[in-house]
Length: 312
Image 1 (cartoon, rainbow, N blue to C red):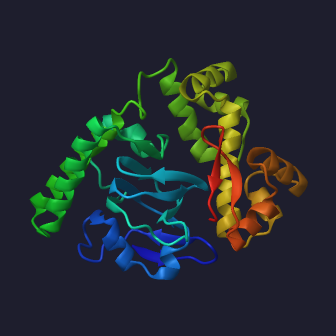
Image 2 (cartoon, rainbow, N blue to C red; image 1 turned 180 degrees about the vertical axis):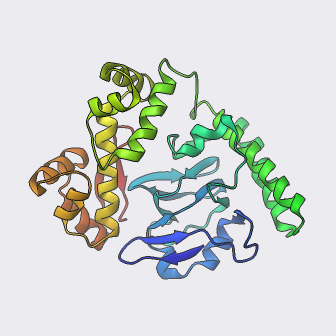
């Protein structure tokens, strides 16, 4: 990994110092801790690659996109490119003493499998708690990846095997009940909306605009989103804009008005009212909390619940 950026969040680009051409790195959490400088390990970071973490033992809190998740044996975490994290940490904010395996891989490394497309698109849950029955197969799968990676073979077949093993793990993730379950009516409509939302959230939050682009009636989008997430298309659009605003406020020195304009708000007051409604805090309060490390309760944009940041 290559650390760049400034302010409170560090940008981390994919870089495998040992096996440069390979778009996959497999390592233990302890190995990652020893590699990171303390000033980086203790700060939030934003990745440009996928990260999967499976906890084997230990307990800690991990922040992803300003929401705290409890990590313990059987916790499976999947970060997508662009998401902000603070590594699992103890009560004093230091990287935790966890037995865990991490998979770091570029977006183009996995095999192109229809079964895993939605998982890699970024619309699945960040953290899942595996049952004891589920944990065993996942533990063996990441263990096999770690063992094969540790051989450090440069043969072309090794990369092919690692890609196959990663594909198997991703398929296991895709078929978890928490990830998919029974596809609700309008599942494809909901995914089409989410993909278009990722492309255009900074331009429009109008459900009518998205319906026109996709060729559906606004009510069709809303029904599909309600069936898939329990939230309306409008709520999802607002939540996505609020999340981007949080990232920009935490990561940049841009004035609040400029952040608002970059997300389609012509008036700073309108942006302030929107942000406060979505998160429960003004943009200024949120930014100060980022700078001082004080705890702040936030709405969890993707689910409509509240998450609590622990001094991030």
